[in-house]
Structure formats: C-alpha cells, structure tokens
Image (cartoon, rainbow, N blue to C red; front, side, top):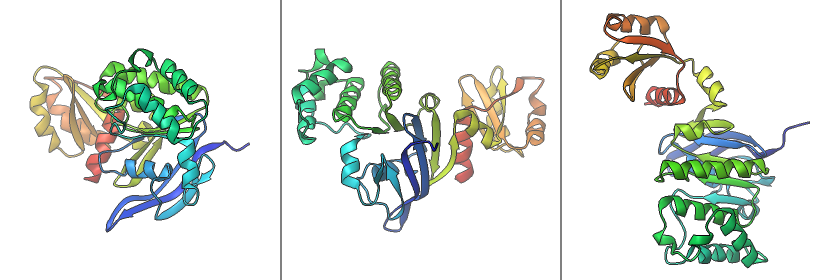
Length: 302
C-alpha cells in the first residue's frame, strides 16, 4: 500500500523578476512525520513554504498539499494548514486570549470560547491569557503563535523558523510540543537554522540557491555527503587554522568549541596536510557532524 503523503509536490518553481528564487523543488512528506527544512538565508525556504500553504502561486510545477492542488485549490489549503511566520504577526495591543479569539473569528469557528479555553490550557497559557501579547517574552509569543496556528485543527503545520530569537529552554519546550502533536497524527514541516533542531526531525531537506541539494535522515545525509572530517585537539590549535585552509584537499576548517574540524573528500590529501602537526596536537578522524556537511555544501556553492 502506498504511503499517504501530506505534501507531494514536483518541480515547484518561483521567480521574482529575473531572480529564480525556487528552482524545480520536489518534496514528499508522509503524514504524521516531522521534517526539517534547512538552508542559509535567501536559499528559498520561505518562498517554498508560502507556495505550499497557498500564499504564493507557483510559476511552474504541480502537486498537492493535504490533498489539495497547490495551483488551483489555494483557499482550501489555507483553511486546513497552520502557518507560523518568522516574525511575530499578531496584535501586540491585544491580550493573549483576545488574539486567539480574533483568529477563531477569522476562521469562523464554532464554540469559539471553548476552543480558545482548551488551547490556553493545552499550551500552558491560562495564567497569561489577560497579558498583552506585546509584553510577552519571545518564548511565550512563540507559544501563543503556535496556539493560534492550531485553533482550526489543521492537518499540517508549516513553521518558518519558529524558534529564532528564543532561549534554549523555550526551544526545547517547543519541540516537545511539536512531537506530541506529531504523535497524534499531525504532519510538520519546519524550517530552522539550528542543527540540534534538525536532528530532532524524522527527515531533513536542505535547499541551497533555490535547489534541493540533499535530503534524508541525518545519518543518510551525512553518509551521502562523502565528507571526511579530522578533529584536531590541543593548546593553541586555532593558530594552525589559516595554514590548513591553504593545503591541498582541505575544503574547510572550522572551530567547534576548543577543537578544530578539518574536512574534505580526499582522505590521503587531508592526512598529508595534517602530518606536520601530529607531534604537537591530537588528531583523530571522526564522523562528520551535520553542521560539517552543511558548511561544506555552502562553501562548495560559494
């Protein structure tokens, strides 16, 4: 039996004048999974998400989002998808409860009062329901925005960098809520810059210059990269970084805490580049991190 797909799009393309923002992107997300959508600023993530949720019409490509045609049934998609934007897009001079009630009115939901009360309880917002939205911290604003996205009981959540600017504890709590929702059958596509968040996803899609360059589980993406990484430890290790960057076979050098990651695709060339430093530093080959892979992809495309 074929796997049911919440998102099934092929060749999605969007241009803004002469700029090709999204270049023939294919995405197929099974129902009930949490997928991470990654890429640097300007890579096309937001534009793709806006096409998926019916806010932008593709210039080319086709497919469905929760069963509705992305080209001809945008209004139906909007009513059945929860979309959380990068910026806080609610009314700061209204209370938390008033914001949720307003959203419920926009969707013309029945039993508004009960729905709002249930959402306040579900997200731990009851004690803050009378607080002005503009007075909330980043983490509480994020929680309120998630509640507003969920009021109409969508089948799919599209979240555009929802945790940008919030503290680590608020990010952790947010992801606990996302996985709880997923366990209940909700499908989630979330764009993020945080590698630890990407590792919480069932699968990830990495987009660069409008094109999907890799996809799969974290383990699959790392394996597909073919990247080899040596980790250099020791006192004053940062002093050799610039020298290593100019060695044959070294594709990038980056600091991670107190250690140096030296990566490329030619193991022999990397070993030769590192040989002069083996007496001074501890050097070991380790599995590349997801961040190693993404840094290499960006530098290769630069």
